[in-house]
Picture 1 (spheres, rainbow, N blue to C red):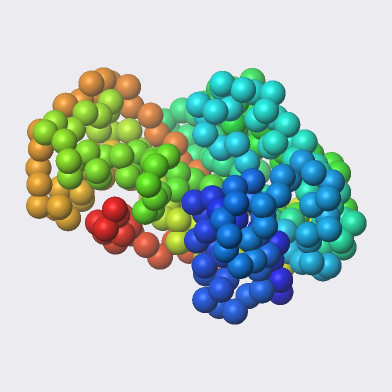
Picture 2: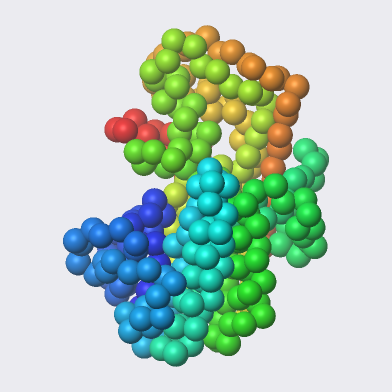
Length: 287
């Protein structure tokens, strides 16, 4: 197995490449950012010359994207150009190089606005008019483009839950609340009852590798095993840090729950998140 990773300098990409190196899996990575690291090439996924960089017969792990909502909202044309046109270019390049599979990083946000009591499963119809995120819209369009145009032996869509882990910026609520407990005199949060299936980046990497080698078109949620509330993150952070600043709820009634079920990935891929909240937050201590 050989991987070709787009977005290899991203949060998830760097962890994936490091895991592959540790496992002895040959990997070539491209990113729009220069890194100078061996096996990492600066390239634009929209450039047809990307095909020349793909090892013949490789598995493509397509992580590259304009992924921050604020950036997608500021320049939706660029977001669609990179996230959709770029994806189609990578698919064409993959076919040219006779790649065996495309593993496509998508998002739980493609399910759109959901009710608190609703569980999101891969086989449910998606109402695109309920999508309020430009990023999510590019991802569901990307998914459909792959479904209609990919001629590879395998196309695997992974809808990531809310990913967290050690990183310098672009934090999820998990990192933001942990560092707020560590550093602020008062922790401000909308509603402590708001919950997500947070998942540590190392579990995401494990899920990506489990998905490699699949055939056909498949979709999997890669999310945590349970819904974790913001209140639980604050409490676990306080225990780890030995610090309990007062917490101010700015809108306690505005409870938001998203619950993308990971049963299919556990049953079909044989994958399961291994890092619980306390262990996951502990990885932030050095940050």
